[in-house]
Length: 374
Ligand code: ADP
Ligand code: MG
Image (cartoon, rainbow, N blue to C red; front, side, top):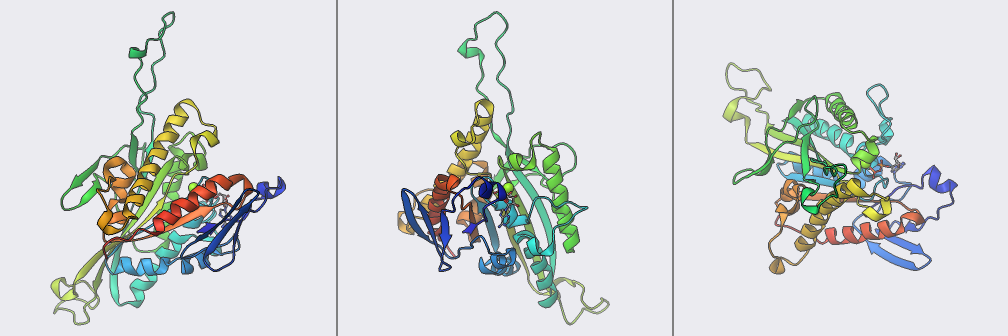
């Protein structure tokens, strides 16, 4: 759990702090008619630094597991403005011209640094590549207006279609929806997804910033309101292979030399910045916007449903409906496979966010009970 500090606006308008942590892994929510305590593996209070979150959340171990060939996932969950993007990527104001200060870099950049550092110290060579997708709910067809002078008849109206789209944030040009497919060997995968190799921290950080501005460009809204209606998934594929200390004749030391280079492992590290979890009625959306918000909420609901079912004791588990949404299909392997998942639930300490904070804490409590086969 990460509790962000009260923002200036919240302090100025006199919001009360209703969330407290005593540093023992518990969160207390105390307001006029509420008094609840929740226990978690780790709780980061408003004063916790980005580094403390990286070290204390198990993120470093996740990076190491990815190098060892596991599929690892970290997902940030919580209402809009609760600090999900800040936790993953640092403050939003950074750009190519104005990079963020090292102290505020998020889990992503710290993990990349860790991966590159590990590749040097372990004596194994890592090949790193990244792909970046977003699941955005787009209004594909608008409701046709009734012809002037005619009463609109129900059968003339087609229901607004709002199937969420999977888009590639690395592909230049206007966003294109990519098909989500399934195969026996690969499970769910996105067809024609771009993947880019990178070898330095600058390369991957630039990639992130570019994709971020791409995201901004593709939307008529500001980034925050756009991102609050889309899920973003950045996956780093880690291929590791021990470097042979006895190079085959005729090759240079340190190069991959076929079978003598040791077994290769393929792991992945996926960062998921989920759409805001707030309920539609509280954001004041109406009409098409609320269809959009509903659909995003539907995928969060589907995710919650899968988590609830996975949280049941193994013998009592029924079929897990991953197919219910694009989000759960893409996350199927992280949720129920042999991977390791870290969930960072972000909450605001403000009294105004009380009900969303409680719902995030309940959701996180359920997620904590999920265990899958090692
Ligand atoms: P979300 O992605 O959940 O919508 P953001 O990460 O954009 O939320 O955070 C909302 C605002 O709060 C941003 O201005 C961000 O810089 C600030 N913020 C979030 N978490 C922290 C934190 N731990 N420390 C300082 N500022 C934070
Ligand atoms: Mg965000």
